[in-house]
Amino acid sequence: MPYIKDKDRKKFDESLSMIPEFSTKGELEYVVYSIMKQYMSTREYRYSALHACVYAVQHCADEFRRRFLDKRENEAREANGDIN
Image (cartoon, rainbow, N blue to C red):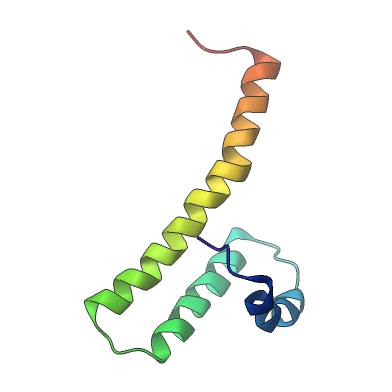
């Protein structure tokens, strides 16, 4: 998961803070895809590296879903009532 040590986060935090606000989902997808390509640019084009890249993004998506989307769904269920 994305839980790396604080000292390791610092080398990315300044660059990440310089990314402009996203206007569309497409812009977000472009940046994520570009980061994946950058990751692969320093690795051999092998299944294990490709899988690690996709797996990392999937893990981040799973964590985002767990922390944010699931929370929002639970709030909507509580506000509107559960389905039968």
